[in-house]
Length: 366
Image 1 (cartoon, rainbow, N blue to C red):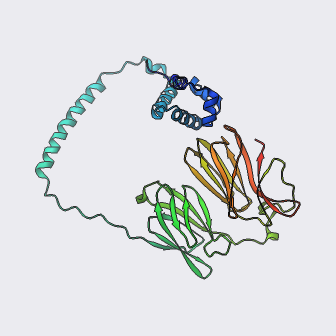
Image 2: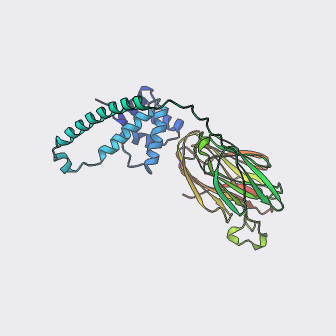
Image 3: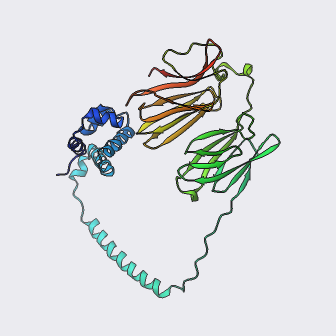
C-alpha cells in the first residue's frame, strides 16, 4: 500500500525522533500547521499558497523528496472533488480504442514513408550560417517616462537640466546590473530604485525592473524609467503628503529607535528570507509611491526597499526573514516578532519633543 502524504511526513519525523515544537523552532512554521499537514487537514491554512509553501519547507527539513510530496498533495486534492454519478455508471465505448489503434498504425506508416522520402530527396547540406550578433543600442529619453525592453550592452541617455547622463545595462543574471554615473545599481524582479544622476542630493530618476527571466540574457529585460517630480516647498505640501510628522510628537512606547539625527534622510529596509513567507509593503508619505506591493517569498530570496520618509510592512511570519535598516552610512539589524507571528509595523521618521528626528519601528494592532 502506498503511504499517504500525512503518513510519509509523520514517519520521517518520528524516525528522526523530532517533536512538533522542535521542528517549529527550526523551520519557523507554527506547530498547528505541522500537525495539520500530517493530519492532511488543509482547511485551517490561510490559503493554498501557505499550504504548499509550508509543505515544501517541512519536506525539505525532513530530507524527503519535495516533488513526490507535492504529487501526493495534488492527488489528495483531486480525490476531494466528487465525481458525477453519471460518469461512474457510464460504460465506455470500444469504438474510441479501435480508432486510436488505427490512428497509431497510420501514424507509424506515415512516419516511415516520410523518413524514406526525406533521405532520398534532401539536397546537399549547405554551410551553416554564422549566428547574428546583436549590436548594442543607445536610446535617448525624450519625455518624463520611458518603458522598453533592453538587452546587455544597451544604454540610455537621460537629460537633466542642460546635461545628459548615460545608463548602461551591464548584465542580466539572478538580478539586473545597471551602470549609472554614480554607481552600479543591482535590481531584483519588480524592484525599483531612485537615482541621483547629477549628485546634487535629490533623486532625478526612478528605475523599475518590470519583467525579465533570470539567467536568460537573450530575453532581455523590460525597464521603466520615470523622471522624479521636483520637490515642493514644505509649507506647500498638504498634511497627508508631509514627509514626516509636522508637529513634535513623543516616540511611541512600543517603538524601537533605529537612528537619531537633526534631519531625516533616505533609508533602505534590507530583507533576506530564510523560509516561506507572504510579505506586503507600502511606501508612506510619498504622493507618487502609494501603491501596495505583495509577493510570496521563499528561502534565499532578497528584497531591498528604499524610502524617503516611511514604510509600512506586513509579514505572515516575523522570523521568516533577516531584516536590517541602512541609512546615513550605518546598518542596524531589527527584530519584528516571533516564529509564525503575523506582524504589521511602520518604519518611519518622527520629530520628537527635543526637535530631533528619530527613525522608529512601531508595531500596529492586527
